[in-house]
Length: 380
Image (cartoon, rainbow, N blue to C red; front, side, top):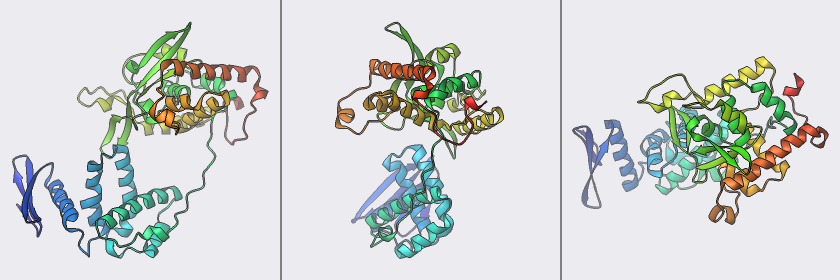
């Protein structure tokens, strides 16, 4: 049995029983997992009940208050991993610092040591969240970030595919292992983790008005955590959707259709479904290497999604339908509360994309290429 001034932790079979007294009443709770999990839960309850000790450090606060809150708040696994990565950046500088003595000067000094700029922004976001939690818990009197300005990193120009490059680029990747995933990202605007989670059972042939489309059923995402690959639900309520692909993507994707994941690892393990999928990060790395070796324009998977949105904008597709296909609302009340994404709406914008890509090949001077560094397919 473990004791402290607030309560006790006692082994009960495969679980742990924690007991404490608050408001003159005795309380208890069963906690599954390790003893450390039970101790953390007891510490979290103590903080909520009595507040932080004056000499509590940020390391204590992270372990006993912040990290346990992820489960209570229902944070997505990817968000949790991002927070943990940011904490690892902050930990060497603040883990032994008292929460109650955190000042704007300390914040500025610590963040100046966190590099590069993009990492600093994420670390600051986490620490600001922790400070606000500490204020609610009574451990901080003022928000030290109120007088600190964290400079956002300069936005770099994305390397996108121009509409005049699409046909040649698709020819260049034909037969590549990652071709099916790339077709879904460019032709359907899927997030990288959504495309990597697709199986061929999620790809359906749909004849409509004399045209054959490919319909993708997007219901999950493949993310990489400290515990390895994990299949999870899509990012938001809008993200679970059907996406309609037209030409020049649909016929090629349907011709490649097989069984199992679109991004297979070659491992078959029925007990661990994620083992069948290759890692999204591994695909990105290998895709970049392949492009370099073959002189093909490297466009990051996330930028294929940006390309999808950009070309649809040029083609005059309705924003509400493009946003729906990409898995989010367009910010209007209509999209948030009323409009539903249908296959017919998906076919409409898929036709727009098909027509604009075809027109750009016939009259390329109507859409000149942007001046962006890097090889393109037409440079080969």
